[in-house]
Image 1 (cartoon, rainbow over the protein chains, first blue to last red):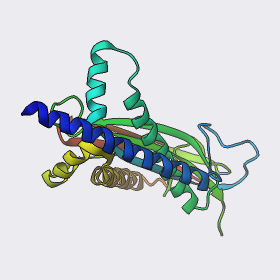
Image 2 (cartoon, rainbow over the protein chains, first blue to last red; image 1 turned 30 degrees about the vertical axis):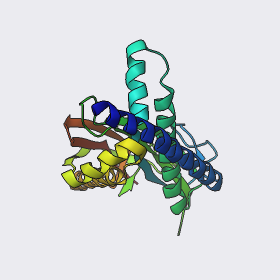
Image 3 (spheres, rainbow over the protein chains, first blue to last red; image 1 turned 180 degrees about the vertical axis):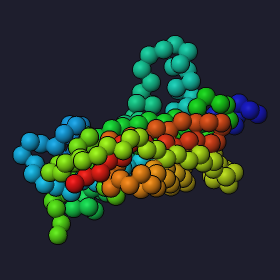
Length: 149
Length: 104
């Protein structure tokens, strides 16, 4: 009985997870193109040519859940070692989504540049069995925008 | 109050350093949200309730940091950093910290 439930969850997780991921990637690519005008840097200091600009803190965060299939695959890989591709794409999605949300916030401030960007990853649920498993990604930086008067 | 993750403010000079300021909050989610998240854990996708929760917590942490900065008479907080840690299952601490300064 347990095995049947497991098999159903595994199959449902695989197809539903793949569908969700595909849809998310389509939306990410679309918005990345729309927000291409906002430049993102990890530089600690503004470009030397900068004279007087307004600066403000911007942040973007997202929590993305893994699906059942990804969880099982990762569990198997953690026995034998090696690359866990199912988690790589999960983190990639989360990071790009967080950057997009940060860019959107910067755009609302009328900024075209975000510098000193930092990332922070936080695993929700951790290793406790039966807990919700997901990853939180936070991207934050300083948006520089023309002085408004 | 100017908030920035930079060490400098372009075009403005720091006249006074007032030291470290911080704000933190510990939040837990309620069971209802967890039930829905359990379903999401099978099919994958964004956990919106969690995103909102952490977002709110971060805003709260920043607000507390700003309050502390205001108390010291600062008009800006520079070099802001965030940190998150899980305290127990289902509860997370969100910390925001930075340096309070006065700008000319």
